[in-house]
Length: 364
Image (cartoon, rainbow, N blue to C red; front, side, top):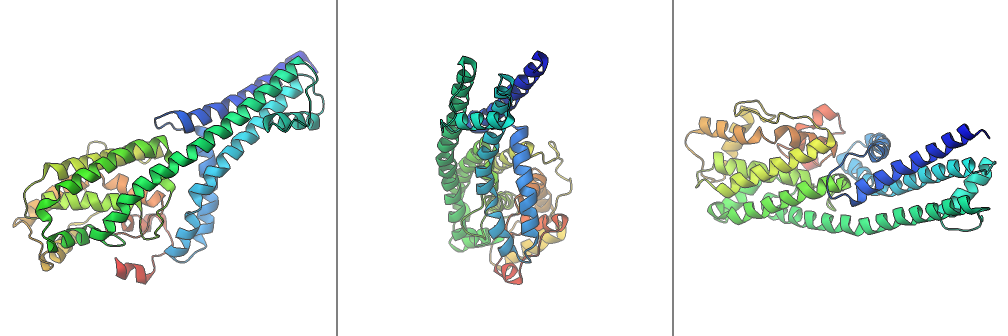
């Protein structure tokens, strides 16, 4: 084989291995969100398959069962693809070092990478290459095995607060049910601990759901619950509390909203969802004034005290909602979130998803 060709094959092999090492480090080790092209290709490819399978279902329940497998299976496919690429890279390098048959190069690469040892290197360069392949193969698998427990620990912490929300906001949750229930138990003036708790939750979501982006697509154990619908309900509840409900203005509610839209915007940046970074208070959102008025009537009929000037209340509420509306609806649509008022119901028409069953709408 010509020397130039050998160098080209070896360089190509090194390049493939380098791509995988870069993806593994940035996906599993780097403590910050980083868009990795190879990882993105894997997740988008499997998502297309799951979109087709989910589209075969005529109900949300069926679609949820399909999509519940998307993140776990893709997370397992990811290291398999990495190892396949590394195997191909070392096969090229073994071929460049004189292993003339591609079949022999494949066997030697696989034997070394998976530490099977049924093929023995013939000289010092191929022995060194075999050691390198074994080290990389074991390293990638070790990183991935260590990564999984951390993913599920973070998932459990996230879902604990999502599950607790159902006591106040119902299942599926809504901001109206949240405010009505806390009004019934005379907690409207005592919500600051709730806002502080969710402010911490949003801060953790912002960090974990970009550095460990697969968490975005992990679905809740209960089909009616979702981290993104829970986020939307809390943001709307805090926004309504400070704009529309006749109680003392809470700085903790305001901080909760700010922490929330900051977290969702960071996740949206990672996912490539567009939004206006500097919206105006009067910019339109997915909530119409008529919907706001209907919500106010519902709250008033349930005995929740409202401010006298609902025109100003609408302006104030819209001023809060405009900060998170686009990213909330975008993430809800991308994750195929379960039905929830003013959250995932905003994205159903544009995504052309299977309809929500009538039973679920009544329960909302």
